[in-house]
Length: 513
Image: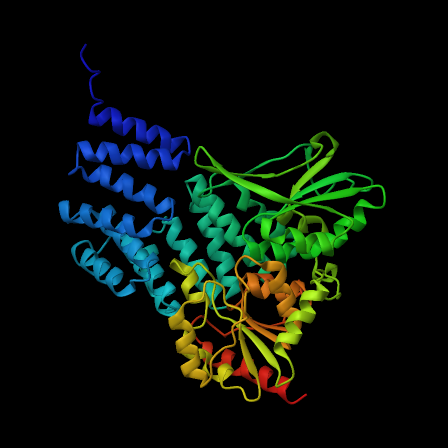
């Protein structure tokens, strides 16, 4: 009996493209790999596979695929732009610029190449210089929506909020792809929030849930989808936390107001990140606290409430970050109460005992766990922490999760003393105990990451280093979400020295009390 005929390269390519259209990115990746094995010198297949790898966050393999495509077709602009993009996401900026310079020399009128140089410079912190390249891209192609969008982001970074608003509006009119339109709408919403336009900003913020965004999140929940005009009194409401851990802690600060709106006859069920369940259960005893479940089905991220006892009892459900549309429509809607989370008193006492008597104890966390692409520039470089590390009469405690030995060594060398390491504490996974440690400290100094949000949510005194015009500040000098957070930001991206000196002054102020 003869074996079935092997699929042709064209059939393999068609299958891969179909899986990609259906959103099954993992399946598409495997199918494109099979197709490429049958036609290893096909530049179009290399490009398709590289793009899928990028969408899955596999930047190093994607860069290798684009490099192969460039070697096979040196004049292929898609390949050159793609390789520069992945090099940029990997933080290899000089290599990205070199690739783009060569491409522009050969194709000086290609607007997308000028736009890509601008993005690379922006991620390096050279935002003002980047504007020149966005301007040139738009001169060459006035209808290039991505260049208008990137110029808006650069204006946003520089604090030129009115100019950014105009560029976002232009980009929105030029956008032809639904994915681009959703990206622009979401970015424009964060700008509106940064300008203090909360009502308009929260409406646009719903674009985060667009099915056209990369790796869109869908929700599986019983009951009716909540809307701001629906009454809540006496209802059973399921709230599904979303985005990252820090976002859950930020938006959850409004939950006491939601519980009050539900009234004594109502009931809130809250599905949060599993690491938060015990902390939230202690802090919100009026609510049922569950761990949410996240699955990837057909290339789409689906979130649901795990362990929901009686789905038929749920009247309404809402994504957590949609609730500000009703409960935070103006800055005056933010209460002045301290943190809503309650750390375990026994563990707070444990950490205070560990710290013992001595100079004020200051906890430090200096980055996020994700430093790819644009996120890298949102955190001060290690050397800029020197004024904070040298602040006199303090004990420095490490709060940085996933810390590397070379980071601790560099900080110790800068400050002339080692950071204290909390014994037995997994700073990434033991969130309830980390909350207790934050409450035992005299001060937390943090970038805008999950640990900083946790400290603020627990009411711990916190200095938070933010990026310029950070939208969670909502145009305020204070930090409306958590009153015990004191935000500090540079004037523009990259100018960390004054901000760090300001932070060091706060630490010194603490020692003089």
